Every structure is written in C-alpha cells, then in structure tokens.
Image (cartoon, rainbow, N blue to C red):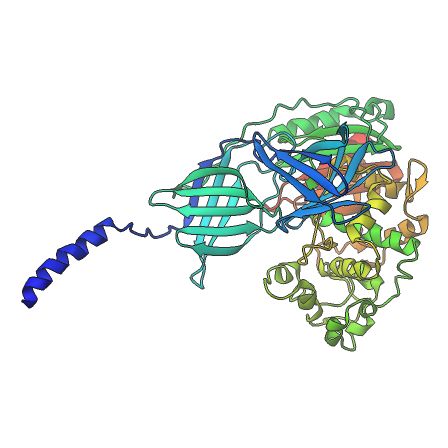
Length: 571
C-alpha cells in the first residue's frame, strides 16, 4: 500500500513542478536596450487657473501624461504637489504675463518660466534631463549587481552623455521586480526580470514615461549617438534678449586664427570632451562655440565651480545684514541637536575659515564629500561635524566641499525665506538668469553649497563678468565692491593641491605665461573641466565647460586657455 501511494503522488508532484514558473537567477552585469522615443523626457507643462485656488495641470511628452486638478496651498503662490514627489512653487509676475518659480523633483530645483498662452493659462517646456532637443542617443544600459548583503541594485546609464547621470537608491525587490528611485531627478524605476530579458519602466511619480526591454551582454556597452549638426561660429555671437551685448572678435584685436585652430583640434579629438568655449572682452560677448550637442540653452553641470556662486550668496547676505560678519562662529548658527559635536578647536571655526577652506576639519578623511555623501542613514551635517580636527582653524587650508556645505547650512538657518528663493531674488534675477538647476543636500530641501548647480555657459559668463565689474551688472550693484575685493584676496594657499594655489573666498588664483608676459587669473573651478577665468589685465572673462570626469583630463580647460585663448587675446 505504501509503495502504491508513493507511485501515485510522485508523478502528481512532478506535474505541479512542470506547471509552476521557474524563478530565473538574476544575472549581474550589463543589460542593454533602446528607448522607443528620444523625447520621452522633454515635457510641455500647461497650468490653467480654474477658480479660487484650483489649477488644472497638464503635462505631455508625445502623449498626455498628467491631466489633473490641484489646489494651491498658498494664497500668493501656486503651490501644490503630486504624490509628495513632484512639487510646484510658482508666482505670477506683476504684469500677469508669466509664471515663474521652481519645479522640484528628487534633489533638483528646476527654475522655470511659463508665459501666458491663453486666458488664465500659462505654459512652456520643462526638461528634467536638462537637454532641450531630445536625447542624442536611444541607447540605455542597466548595470545589475548583487550587493554584499545579498540585496540587489541596478544603475541606469544613458547613451547621451550630456545628461548628468543618476544616483539610484531605495532598492526593493518584490517577486521578480526590482523597484528603485533616482535621488537626483526623482524618477521611479521598475525592472522586471524575465527569463531572457529585463522589462524596464520609467515613471514620473506613478505616471509611466517610457519602457523598454533589455538583453544581457558580456561584450561591454558601446553606446551610439546621433551627432547634432552644429555650425561653428568664429565671428559675432548671436544677439539674444539675455542681457549680453555681442560684438565681433575682430573688432577687439582678437586673433581668430588661434580660435579656428582651437575648433579644429576639438573636432580632431585632440581636445576631448570640450562642450563650450565663450569669451567676453570689455563687457561684450565676442566668442561663443558649442560642441558635442551642447547649445546655449542647456544648463551644464558645474560641479565645484558653483562654490564661487555660493561665495557670492554669502556676500550678498553680508551686504543685506542677514549675516553680520565673516568672524561669526559656525556653532552660533547650528541647531541645538548638533551642539554636542563642538569641542575646543571646533568652537573656533568662523565663517571666514569656511570661505577659505581653513576650517581645520578632516576634509580629506571623514569630512570628505565622498564619505559624507555615501552615508545613507546618517545626516551629512552630522558626519561632517563629527569629523576630527586636524589643524587650528585659519592656519592651514585643505580643499574640501564640507566647508561651503556648512556655509549653506548656516545661511539657511537665519533666513526667513527658502534659500533657493533668496538666491534667485538676490543673484540670478538681477543677472537675468532664468534657466538653471539647483541641487539640494541630503535634506532634499536645502540647496547644496558644496557644488552641484547647473547653469548655461552664457549665464556662467555673466557671473564672471559680474566679478570683473566689481559686483555690477548693467549698471546695477548686485554684490558690493567690498565683497568682491575681499573674495579676490589671497588669504591662504591650498596645501593639498599640486600647485599650492593661493585661495580667496571660494575663488582660485593662478597665472599663465604667454608671449613672454605673465597674466593673473582668478578662477572658479569644477571637476571635469568647468572653469570661469577672470583676466583683469585683459579685461576678459572666459568660460569653458567640459566632460572630462574620469579620464584625468580635468585640467585640459586650463591648457585650452593657455595654448589657444590667451595667444588669441594677447597682442
């Protein structure tokens, strides 16, 4: 009897197994595919005022994605959110002809302006991937990795390298689907692992933007891109309504043959990953060129070059009396919950030490950006403040993003308006800068002063010209001349960089020899080759943006200045 039962049950068990879908092991490595539409991340936004505080939001790419009614939580602004993930904070101008303000998702505050397009209706573009003309490539890759704790992670990469990239997190696997979120853009992802493919979906909140199927490869990902046709201009830059007066470089005695040689070498890949080169001479924009699909309307990742912008905001707050002096102490601004980290040396840290990279904190160790940004559970501020002191404040300068990060925390604590609004009102609006992105810190709320803004090169050139003009733009004093002078002083020398550069208030000092003459330069510098060069003796400002992030060519932009631009500018 026992054998007979066993005979009957065993075949039934085999039948059940054969009908049950078998879980496939998730394969680590590269999974590649193609996006069905390269303009999936170029949105048109329409806002219609219905009645009272109600607004109809429509958001489309090639299809209608969102068409919902929202109620503003503010009487004087248009403030609402979708699913606590997509935030709108807009204000109508005094003429009633446009809405301007921020769309926030993830860590990005996108500065937008929507003109009036019909009665009670405003609209315009919003490009969360920053590019205004669609992706250059439809290639996409997902890198899948089993972590040491047995969890699964996945990292998407895009063939269009103009897009800054993503910072995925919040990984959660349910069944055969991995859910995760990009901390920068706030986009949500679902990766469904099927026997021979991954079905990847991308969402804005819960709205499907695009989906594709990916296949595994062991041959490496060699992405393709459709080059944007760009005619190079060595004459007069186009005149727009952005505040720049343009002029012909020949009228200023500039040797355009040197600039033509520059373009040739960029196209020949002698100068790799150069994205833009702009020159202002005597207050006029005299040269402007873009490469690799970039243009005048695409905000570029500035990395640490935006530290100099952070310095400007601190200076404006000094001018406004919001901050009293650079001698104020760090711990006088910090919340009570962080006071326990104070010790005898840390109690001596003043704002001027943060501005000059001389706080004495271990910025190349526990307080390094790589360390405090890698923590997922500990607040960045706590990690930085718990770092040991290695020097007496004000006696030794080591370059580290923790210093300006703390400046942003200090200013945010004493403002009675959001920091991003203060920055826009006091600096960007007076310069006519309306197309930029502000990255937040780990609070997802406060702009990060350690670096990470995105501005267009023309607007970055404005910022440099503002400082060359001793704080003035088009006759208006935006920053006090005293702050500019203090910012450009050589306060200390950076000890942890090869050239031991003199350093101001988040501004670098350098010099270049050309045709037997030496020219000083005050510079904003960012990883990958983001530079503002202010050249007082030549009455010139130069901006170069680039994408040399992982090839040890981050200083190539300095070579471009020395070998091509200065020979063109120097008689």
